[in-house]
Amino acid sequence: MNYMFKAAHGVGSKIRHLRRQKGLTLKKIANLCQCSTSLLSQIERGMVNPSFSTLKSISDALEVSLAELVSEVKVSESSQSSLMRPKERKVLTTEGGVQFQLLTRDINVPFEFILNVWPPGTSTGKELYAHEGEECGLLLEGELEIEINGKVYRMRPGDTITLKSTASHRIYNPGKKKAVAIWVNSIPWVFSTR
Image (cartoon, rainbow, N blue to C red; front, side):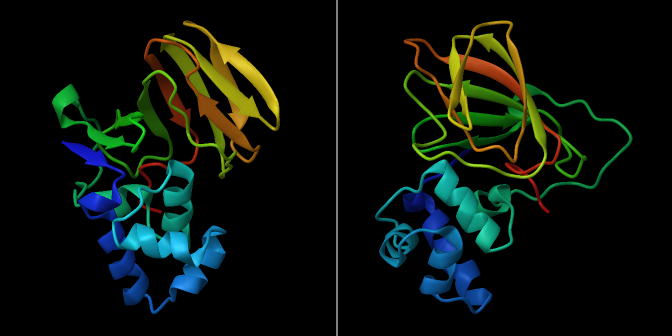
């Protein structure tokens, strides 16, 4: 199943519902997200599709995971082992078309193992972002540029990169082909329920 970061497909109304349920005003959430009240209102009404970083800021402000914000899927309890078929993967797709596929069945494991597919010209957004933990990526095909604290690293197939997630960073596909990478976050945050 494909989960779009599109306000038009229910994310906006879910944001509004969670905000009201928690007794928070538009202004309070906007301040926490460092975005305008007007933008947040437009997202809630389905008039604007939020960027990945804006959506992550909103989920943090509402104290819910990004996965919880964009999907209705319930996750089963942990087991000792698990085999997952490709069709069973939880998938998040940004409005720009970047796809994140969770490669582990249980999202409560202490790390996040994700297959990322980046169409040409796509990115995590114009703004640099940061979060807790460390991350490591392996580029399987295509090319990616990773900007970390203002320094740009160009990845080619077979290259790996490791970084402190607390460093301001951004990922971009400058190529004419899709880029495919395996990414591991030491502290789950894309699909996290924490």
